[in-house]
Length: 537
Ligand code: GLN
Image (cartoon, rainbow, N blue to C red; front, side, top):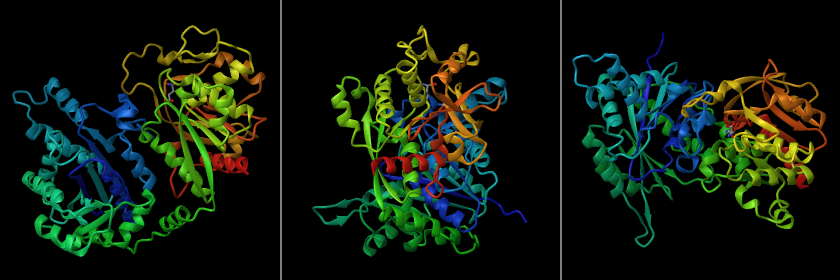
């Protein structure tokens, strides 16, 4: 008999950055470990239709799903912690909701009616809850923002209405809140949580569970106080203290039986949870056999969140090699003015260099310098998307001798546009959602490094770019030693290139980092870290 879907709404109080996304993902991991199918929905209160056009320095990375949606980076956490494959329906912004409602209004769907936040916007949000909750036993729905924000009100109102329509025991609310430790008083303070829960109750939502973020474990007296003032059972108040690694959250929550409590409240009977894979990861994180030093040479290094999936994929590559990855963030623009000696001072201490994706010309010459250093000094080099494009430009300039080789994104009239716009992109004028996005197949060349690393002939990887390798110059580049080891099945698009006479030089047009998990590192990242360990010996 088909079971009805249960809903967990996750809201946040007091401040942002409490780790709501990680908490939701870790809860998903635990429910999955009990044999339940989970799915996620992230609601974002901003007006952009999606985060695709936002600067990564403001909002962090854009996570791309299989179906080519540009989404909030929390979807990356969901995919890394569970086996869920998210899609466009799993992320929704206030902008998208309004866009749908206004489109319907123009079409005449509400003819005669006044279109209002309640019920039109809140109804549309509830439709989104159902769409995001397909094919699962438990849907975990996370609302971005903080309770008390004007922006999140329609989402919270929709939760309140939705809850009223469901059977008792089919919906719970988990409120993630801050319990700060005040040093001078040597005490943890409950007041901010009291206020936040009061604000939530004012809207009509009584939280069932409190997850209390803080520097320390929650003492019993604090738990009792929170229970009394927030009207939440004492055994429904859980600690969410800072831990060394986000991947410790599933076992940390498990040790408090958070998953057991959730199942009890939702009336779900499951098998005992199996958290062995998470325990194994924790063990590697706590006691790695070695450390490898990787340089990430990019333009958005001031906000590490901009490279979230990439950093995580590097860590996963480390776990696969029982190794800790020590990352140096290097601003590519700063490399541009350095002398050869200074460049070597910056790059010689590292065991591997990764040049990530990006947009715009700033810092691209610095990326090219980092690539040249890696190529000449035989340091493992991993180029991704713009990193790949710049690596090919470097080779074209230095080895083919095409001094002004470039991407037409930066120099439209170069005599050697190694990277250029495909005809299909030439007339695109709208910026939102118009790049080559999402999963595409790629065939691998027999005998190549990529073929050996993946261990299969055909792969599928996710994309987010407009520019491509110029097919007119492929022959000359090949003659000069470039191996195009991955291409679209019809051979019309370059997906991977590598260099033969180098220990590890692999560059991909796609973003492999989106598919890596702590418990199953992406093969390219595992191999890159292995090569970097070798280089460091
Ligand atoms: N700016 C490049 C392009 O659009 C690379 C994009 C990226 O690195 N994601 O093709």
